[in-house]
Length: 346
Image 1 (cartoon, rainbow, N blue to C red):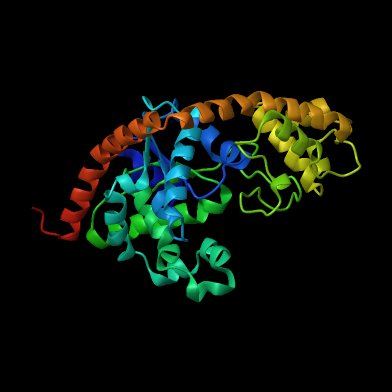
Image 2 (cartoon, rainbow, N blue to C red):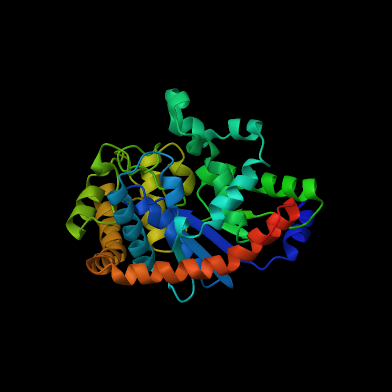
């Protein structure tokens, strides 16, 4: 589809943002810089934004029920503490809006097995034990398409690793529209931007910062206190060379590039600007500056998360109201989908 055709395909749809994060483990700096901080910016740029705790996706691998409830609330607290305003953005947990799962079944019947077989995320997560993986993990991209299209979302902020799933969402929307002779679902655009959309490990600059890494020193957790944040940054892996004066000098230095990207993202600057200022500095001088900046930005978020988790009734009220607001958008979309498909409606 040409860019002009894409514009026509989405022109009739209200600009609307949807995205979500799995409540399936500890929250890291990668979640903040790679996702949630962009969510915060977009709530002021778009007329409607919906941000979800995707708990249906979380159970594609087994979750302890009590832990899942706790982590869902922690993620909601993180959203709010990081700057999402429940009066502007719609915040809710996915399972509280049944239309996600209902539309996902329709999309399971639209998507093709060959499309699913090309999804690299399933191969990465299932590994050598693909035969033992859940059907839910295999069908994950179809549910993600439903998450997005149940709101006719036009824009989805995602990391590079999820871009393929948004492309599949476009394929599903296009096939549904073609099969039924309608122009009902938009061609959603992935939004991938910023200096640290993919935050890397502090111990290995070639690997993504992950909550599942066995080394806690590889990541900055959103629950880390100021001393822990500073210590992890001081001990982050680097190389003996000083920072270069031009960005090209970071090409084969993944750990150095990662720290520069993190500094740039935290300071709302470009990596080029950071290098222009910091070029020539040794890491012994640069790391303390990065540590101070990280503590300044992250500590207030951690403090507010802790306050919210001390009385989860506020979180539950936000999520309950958010689910009602989300369903007000999702219900008519599902109803029209059912009519298009040919289901009898009560």
